[in-house]
Image (tube, rainbow, N blue to C red):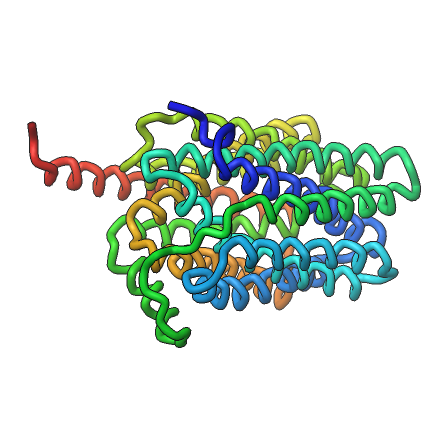
Length: 404
């Protein structure tokens, strides 16, 4: 079987997504590091920074999930990449946390536009039997960019007092390059119904996901999981500063280690030739690995161990999203793929917003390291329960299939 990234128009989508991710990871890792180390953000301020990403992501992904099923996924992607490019100089030029909040808000809107469009394009460009590997190829490009972007940004921040300017300038150049790749992606659109946009479509997408046994399971696992993952995401720079006693470049290096693990997980998915019908198990196993990685990272509290644990958690991430997207693309009707994907994205970010708001409300009482340890343990438990349920559903499905 030909690897889907090497042939046909799909490669332009992979290139655009990978280069935009290179811009994002260098820029966003620097933004989070500078919030803590340059501007002295505490738990409450980091929670606001996390929420500023989640709010537009939630609202925008719901809207784009409706639009992408009716308009052009290609040009929606272009709009999203343009917003990302505009977010970078906003953080670069700013001299306060307020500018970082605005930049984070913009990038949340950018990814709310990009993610449903990319999912819809993948399903339109790649045959069903290649969807798991195609989403794996997208994930490989994304995680490879995470590694290069964060390690490069970390080196710049660690070696030059003005490294943030170099990071932001390089990220902006990459974002503009991603825009240049989008016109080469075919303007393919689904051939199903295109009714007028109504709010009832949101209910349709949610009902479609909830009434499918495995999709419902994945909604619960990823929704609860993202609540706990966001706790780690928001508090990680504070853990690096207060427990690991490292500088802002260490945040980027730890993100790079995470990316190496995610790259390994995503690469494994691209090599799967028999992943179809077992996607839910991959997703739940990935959640377990993320939880275990976070638990070790914070529980041991040693920088060298944290690097390894970040890689383990990253491997889990690499196993979650390509199978999840492939399962939606395989089981949901063509005209509903965008809206169902947006329901998953919106639910996950909504749960992340909830945890950010809780951290903000309890900021004075939050002790960073124990909070992250508990979050990691609960996350692993959620994944284990989900894995057990996914196995049970698979056994029932196998028993119901006709023999011979």
